[in-house]
Structure formats: C-alpha cells, structure tokens
Length: 318
Image (cartoon, rainbow, N blue to C red; front, side, top):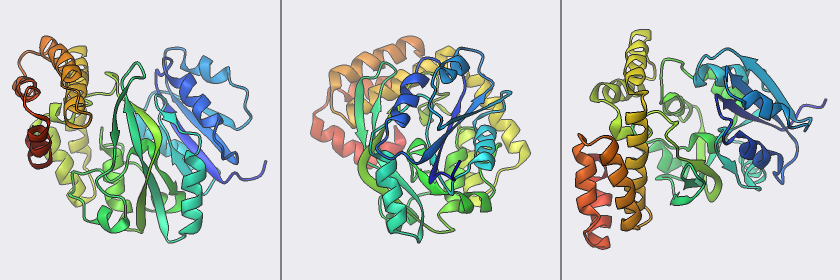
C-alpha cells in the first residue's frame, strides 16, 4: 500500500452512540488519499463492533487497554503512516471538504506546521447550538493569545507529524488540557493558522468531563496555567489533576456542567434567552449550589445589547 497523504487519527472510548456517524463523515470526504487510524482505548460497549462493521480498506484499527486519550493519541502518532495527521473525535462530524481544504493550505504554505478551522457546535442530540469563530486566525494573532486561550479546536486540526513528535507529542499528565499544552509548545516551532470556514461539527455532551471549564476547581486551573507557562507538567501535578477529575466524574457534575454550558452558549453566542433559561434551569435543578447559574439566569432577562457588551468585557468572570 502506498503511503497515504494524510492519517486521520481518532481515539475512541465507549463511543457507541456517535461513532458510526463520525466514521461515515470521514469516509465521505471529497479528499480520498488518507488512512483512517482508529485507536480503540479499551471500550467496554459496542464501539469495536461498530468500527468492525465498516469495510472501507482505509480504516486501520488498533485495540488497546484503557490508557486515556493522551496515550491513545501518542500510540496513533507512532503508528501513523502519513506525514500529515488530521485529528478527529469519535462524537464529532467532519464537513465533506474539511481534509481537502486543510491539505491544500499546508501544501500551499510549506512554512506552516498546523492548520485548524472554525466549527459549528451541536448538543448531544445533534441540534445546532452556536458557531464558534476562533479568537485568532492568522499566525500573528495566534502568537499573541493569552496562555489560557486555546488557539485551535482539537478535533479540527491538520498538522505536520514531525514537529509534533519533536516536542514529545501529548503529555499524559495534562489531563483535560493535553492539547492546550501541546499547542503552547508547537507554535514556538513554526507557524499556525485557522481557516474561517466551519469544517467540523463539535458535539457537546455530558460525556465530556467538566465540559464547562468554570466547573473545574481553582487548583485545577492553577496547575493548568502553571504547566503551560513552563511548557511541562510534573508527575505529581498529574496525580493531583487526576484526583480532581475523578472526584468530578459523577453525573451530577457532568450533567450540570453540560446544561450550564448550553445555557451560556445560547445566551452569549446565539442569543436565544428562552433556550438559555431552559438549560440553566436544568443545571440549577441538578446542582442548586452553583451561584453562577443563577447569575446567568438573571442576565438572560437583560437586553441583547447589554449581554453582548458584558460578554466581550467580563467573559472570564462568569
């Protein structure tokens, strides 16, 4: 088999609900010269059976015991045949021209090492929530972002494999922000860019632990920022993060965080205050002790112009 131009790298863990649609969206790309490398990270549901039901020869499956997303991605990088790697997640959807447009960009710009894209966000049932236009598109804008601002949507990037391997790939200690730590090192090695086209649909779901970063603890955020500033994270810090995340890995927090985020996005990014209140009520019912949910609920009754003004100036406070 000839070396493919792109390796699409997708880790999967207990993704039976959405992985079929995710795989189909990759196989239906207008760009065809790729291998589809799926790392089954110890799934205990029907994930493997669903993957096996596809007969496309471009699919290559690696099964491993559950080791976490960073370890799965590093195994994928080591086994990727192509020099270009497209990240993707097992619950998202690729737009048909995603690979073609990103491949064309890196082909036309050999001095760039990574290209991302804007995205549509959908809820767990596939309903449109909002469109995310990234805070930085040009390399100059990306280089000027604050440390806690992620320059790329993880499942929407295409990158050159060599620079990623040069900085050590994904750090398994950086639980829940392994991509942000990696980007902070990668953009020092070369140029990055984000296309303004919406090339994937990102699915929000309670399965993402503490999906709303404001539901992370203060200790978690301090470790994250400190690690990004240093460009590394210690084993001890990794153990502390894992302990925090395990405490948060309960339905009350995961579901409350999910509905809280939907409420914010319907208010800030797609002004539908009625839908925002529906989701905020669910978040409050699940976790009545979080005062920020009440504050955002109150804001939903203010005029759109005031909400937009507050969003632009006070986003990090809410």
